[in-house]
Amino acid sequence: VGDLNLNRALTSVSGAITLEAAGDLAMSALADLTTTSGAVAITAGGALTMTGDTWVKAGSGTIALQGGSTVTVGKLVTSSPANLTITSTVGAVNDGGDSPTDVYAPTATLVISAYAGIGGGTYGALETEVAAISFTNSGSGATGAIAIEEVDDLAINTIVQQAAGDITIATLNGAITTTAPTSGSGITATTGNITLYAGGTNGVIHHYADIT
Image (cartoon, rainbow, N blue to C red):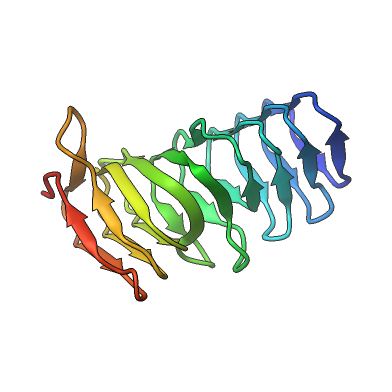
C-alpha cells in the first residue's frame, strides 16, 4: 500500500526534490534526479531501492535517504559539505551496483544508520569518495557486516557495530585517520573482526581513537 515506482528522470533548476512513499519506493535506471542546489530527500516507509545506474545529482544541495526497510544505493553526487545521511530503520544499506563511485561527496561526512549491515548485498562494499564517515549498525539481534572502499583519504569519526558482523574499511590510495577521542568517537564491534587497510602510495593509518 502506498508504493512509488519512478521510471523517468526528474530535474529541478535549483529547487528541492522530495520523494515520499508510505510503502516501498523503487527508482529504475532511468529515474535520475538532478538539481543544481536544491536539497534531495527520498523517504520510503518500506524498502528504498535504486539500481546501480540510478543517479542522484544534487549539485551543491544536500542528500538524505531514509527507508523503513533495506536501502539500496545507486549513485549519489553532491558538493555540499553538510552531512549526507542514509538511514535504514530495520534493514541494511546495500550497494546497488559496481563502479563508478556510489557516493561522491568529497567534502561531506557520510552518516549511515542501519540495522542489518552497511555495504553488503550482491555488490559488496559501498564505494565512496567522502571526507569522513560516521556509521551505526544497531541490530543487536541481526547479522550484517560494515564494509566500504574509499577512493582517497578518510577520517573515521565513529563506527558502532552492534550486529554480528565484521568491519572492513579500505582506501584505494589514501590515509585513514581515526579522530581524536571525543564522546562517541572510535570503532566498536560486538563480535566481528575489525580491518583497516590504507592502500596506495599515500596509504597510512593515523590512529587517535579507541578500537574495541
